Length: 579
Image (cartoon, rainbow, N blue to C red):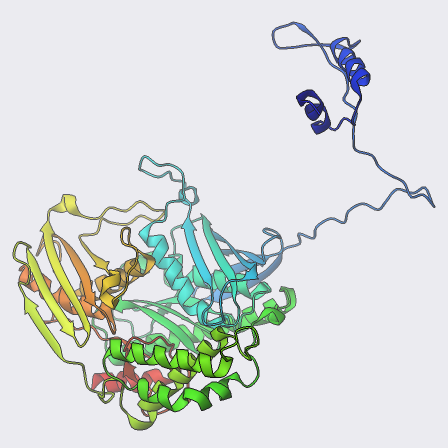
């Protein structure tokens, strides 16, 4: 087949022999129906043979029925959150995604999708979930002020909101869901009345709820504020109200538990904080109940049959083989020695339970490893709750040894070295003029930042090799967390007209490095001569909570472990923290 024949075939003309091709070519060149081109010359054209044929039924002679139209009827749910209404709509847009919703609040509109892959990419030890939040400049009738006019480059603000959405939603998807899952969020219209971070959490939860991706319970996010002189917190305040608010608290949770609180306040009392959390969770619980009912009516059936299942008896077999030894290894204080001992026992369990013959092994190595991780977690929890001790031998009230050193770096404006146990941070403070302030380019109008903090977490801080370069999502999030902890104690522009930049480089990590950054950063600020206000020192603490039955030892500072927390414990926790 030559090139001419190939082109004719591509246009839908059936295969022709040589003489037929010549006759067909002559018919094209000599046509009885001339047309005029743009230049006025006569152009001869002929109709191309069509390859589209409608075949009638051989028995009845009737044409086949038409393809049924896609049902694009919108299913809507109206939610009352504070003083605003949020409308969730599905079924009209994004039909090919596993789940898609358009969420509106005032004139703000957000389009959210969730999609899941078809192939298993994980072993059941984690959820392969990615959340991407994006703001279009056209949403506010704007165009990017830089050289790049196309939207798509991820900004720090978008990364932070993506992390906020991921954090409360991830625990609601079973770890046995081993398929790549992606949540995409676009702000397509923005009225500027309220921020979009809390709305993004609710919108992502709604998309997941109506999809076939397994979701234990819907999640909702709300913002809570406190106006000066008011004893009652505001749920879902406007941006104008937030300018005078003493509290900026973002809360996310389910119908019966708080999954995340993040924010900062202007030296609120313990009672005020508890009141704000209780008001936020009351609003969250109401929305989650409505989302559950709506998703049951309009959503897809959950694909629970695709969840990975552990082989019967593997937990009992592994626990009998190495359970006692793992409990002893988890009590080793030093991180490197403990890690090496645990890894040896995992390998031993794989050999004992799986068998040396890989072809006829009773259990897969990855299943044995997951069973070991479950035993390790239970051993650590039992150590804290039953015996009141932690991995390094401390009780639940004792802080690790702390050392502080100011002026650690010779040529910086201010510096410090902060060490807490096996967690260490070097901080450096740099003072500048107004031209050194951080400028923003986004859909919301924001003032230039006079104070900003950059957090660096090199892989060497945990004894590993890894990539370096642009800030990771984790570095952006941890830096923002420490920045907000220090911002309330900085002097006003009239008192101190300098721009302040803080850097924190983590040199060791076995605990909360973001809170070590808070402590090191406060030291570096004072070393640079920044007159911090209202207190002589800022200390960062980080507590983790578990969704377990009540226990006198539920509270424990972080020691390199991940968990969630329960609203029912907060009252006792705050009282204990206050004492």
